Image 1 (tube, rainbow, N blue to C red):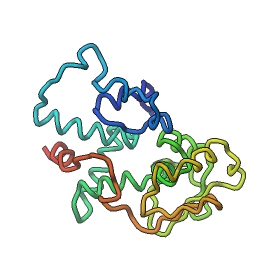
Image 2 (image 1 turned 90 degrees about the horizontal axis):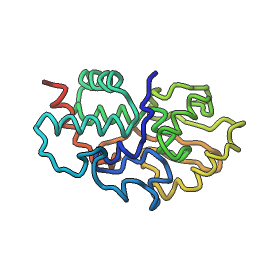
Image 3 (image 1 turned 90 degrees about the vertical axis):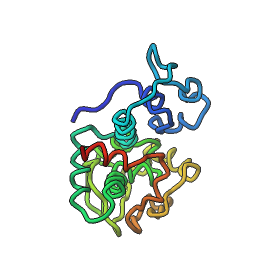
Image 4 (image 1 turned 180 degrees about the vertical axis):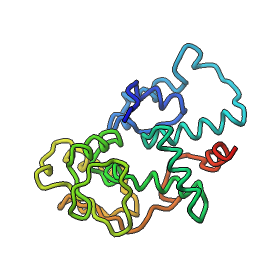
Length: 208
């Protein structure tokens, strides 16, 4: 599947917020967003008033970039969320949070979602004891995500776990750091997602 291969820091500057796409670098002074808090490009410092459509589009782009999904996949999540009883925007975010690559990142096994996606593809993890190499796999309550035995000395996983507490582990995930396990104790709720995403605007955009 095609993926964005450009500069990650430009995405943060475009959305005017840290998306934490480069792992530990985002927490340091080297972060480009800290040094250039304006949009990239020749006219980045100009302040343009967005139309209602432009505001809605920016919210959608922000969510897509945070979770690292492309338009077609993001739209499928929206259509699936629309068919489920409940608040569509919150269900959409719940689907994105339940992705295996996001769980690997949120549990502290990787320092960014991009790194987590690569690790999942390289078969470093199991779910309920079974090998899963699909980043978009949706976890369910009660499932256990575990680092494979032969991958537990992986330098990036160890380094990420050492700084995981500082980044914060969400309440819906119980991390057993010593045994390289993360249990999904419940499905994520809207209050578990700290990102400044106005999901109602995304629903309005797709509902036109």
